[in-house]
Image (tube, rainbow, N blue to C red; front, side, top):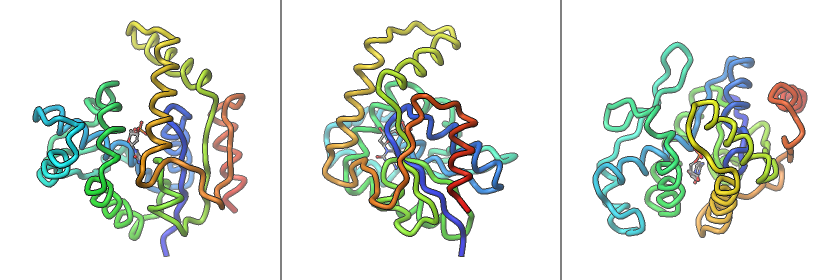
Length: 218
Ligand code: DC
């Protein structure tokens, strides 16, 4: 049986940084499920499909082949064989991902792909519904969160470091809107699984969070 660690939580809680580090320390494969939803969002934007049109998105998603590939231990996301790992990080792609992730057909296909990955590899998988839907029997489930203000500030610092213009109140407002959308959608909304451990990273460093999760994984 492969080993599974599920990390869920809202946007900007540090899930990917922490999951990546944890996976590397444990020699597990890191699976970023948000990247898969982002790829579907990107496909719709690139092909001029109205992301608010459920039927159009569900139908078009049949032509979007999403694949994860690992090169020297780093995850690369392929969309119809093109490496879109960088492009999917754009803000508008994140918003599109949040919208298309509401649609049942999109979720069904990506969930199946995620379950399949976890069958053969030891994984640290992060997302919104990993502990509740994708890996309900995971060995350890973490719900990682932080206040919207702290998450906004982290995002603001990231953008500033890249030399991009950013407005902190707007970022915090966007984060709150995304939380609301992800938590209130009908299918597989973001919520803490009953058996998940809540970790609030507002006042913790990355290393502290990684150590805490390791101490829970015994
Ligand atoms: O973690 P992220 O910001 O890369 O995720 C982008 C969007 O994808 C997020 O707003 C909601 C959706 N998502 C999801 O519905 N289920 C997942 N397991 C992962 C992401």
